Structure formats: C-alpha cells, structure tokens
Length: 148
View 1 (tube, helix red, strand yellow):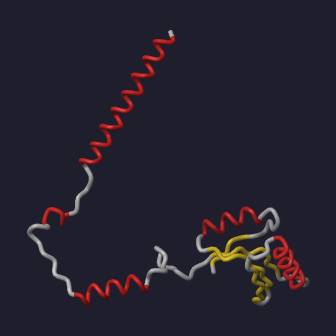
View 2 (view 1 turned 90 degrees about the horizontal axis):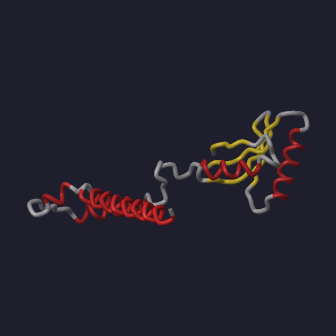
View 3 (view 1 turned 135 degrees about the vertical axis):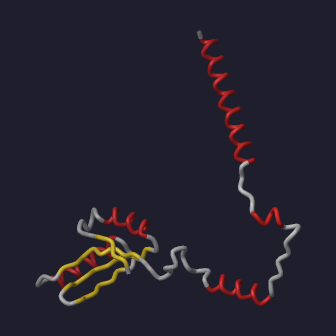
C-alpha cells in the first residue's frame, strides 16, 4: 500500500513538473516583441541633440512627481472636530493627549468658524493613512481621514 502511494505521488510530481516546463516554453514563445525589432535593419531614426536634452530635462524636472501627477496631495487624520462651547479646551486637550501618546508625529490645531479641528500625521498615500487610522481608532474612535 505504501509503495502504491509513493508511486502515485511520484507520477503526479513528474506530471506537474512537465506541465510547468511546457507552460514556460509556451510563454517564452508567445512573448510580445517590439515592432521596431523587425524593422531595425530597414529603419534609421535620426534625433537631434536638442530633443534628447529637452527630454532629459523634462524627466529631471518631474522626477519627484507621483504616477497620478499629484505630488503635493497628502492625507491626514482628523482626531477632533467640534463646535461646542468647550470645543477650544477640548481641542487643546486632544492635541496634548495625542502628542503624549505619539511623540514625533505632526499635530495641527485649526479654527474655521465655528469648528475647532485637530489633524495629525502627514501621509502620502491613502493606504498609509488608513493603516494609521486603524491603530488610532482605539484611542480616538471618531477619527477620520481628510485629504490635504
């Protein structure tokens, strides 16, 4: 019985390896090629040095931009948002509490009539802000993400 199981496992392993090799050779044969690869012996491209320099300058100028083109867009987490009579004192308390729990993370208090707001962090992607929000919601359950 053990021999039969060993033989069956060996055959299935050999079949799996053979199928994987066949798939790899098929994928290699179907790999897309550039149109210019076929024309390289018939076509010559002449490009001025000024055009090459302009392209390199454009790439250098835009090296810090993100793929979406929004290099200055950031996300933050608002941990306090209120307009009550004691909102000013409560916003100061929320900011001080956050600073003591998370030293080194940016905290910003703002007042836009009639709301006092406390916003924390500076995240370049929404995914980073969401991960931070999940950990902050234990301490600040009403926290939410804002786009800056």
